[in-house]
Image 1 (cartoon, rainbow, N blue to C red):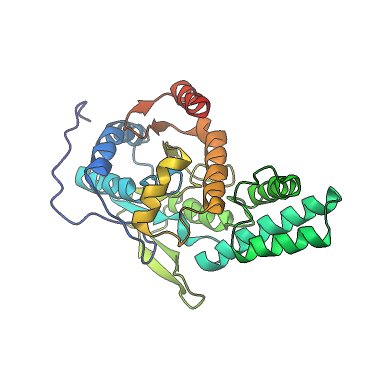
Image 2 (image 1 turned 90 degrees about the vertical axis):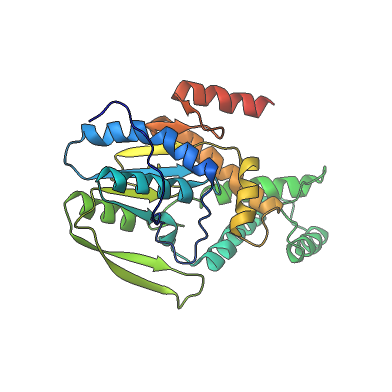
Length: 303
């Protein structure tokens, strides 16, 4: 293998992830970041010889996983190694709308249990809380309201126990797909999920010419997922993901306090898993060691 890699001009169609209806808007920034990642990724894949390789491109919501994974797949195909981009977002246990509702339910039930345990349930509290529910404002800043602070802390704990866990996502199914791929399966039935309960099906995908499967997914570096050979972490802070979520229209309440809480919890889980990443790329497109990553995250928290 040559030591120096020159990025090819992108002239053909770029392979996208397999999430139905997902908006993938590839820009110069995504191409530039993929060009930083690819030489190192190419080395790691070459070290594995002819073995099939699973690469996970992970990071917070809206950090550019889908776009960068697509460009990496293009470069792999140009190199002569077939690549397929699998979207982990096809494998939640509920369609997006129902999962959003379940997240809210988990948060609210957890909050109520916290109020009960603290002996703070009363008719006036419940009346005020129901108003906040109707306005979707029960995750807004408590502003010194003691009972609401208790509710929010307990709700957040409950939500942390749900997000990115087997209760929310079928990690076993994804791990089974990666095991089949590693074992040389020429065809694999892969799940497709839309936004309605009737939009659920499987496609039989020909992987006979594929040597690298790229899993683009927030939870691609999770301890619950088995079979990833090269985790790639795209780092960002929760605040940095909001603009991208707006562009992709990932939900209708992008700026809500509840969505911000979800992003913060996701970030905490990504940080806990970051030590396993073999490649870490900063928001600015710089390769980071794990020690450098920790310093940057600490600086961001202290800012």
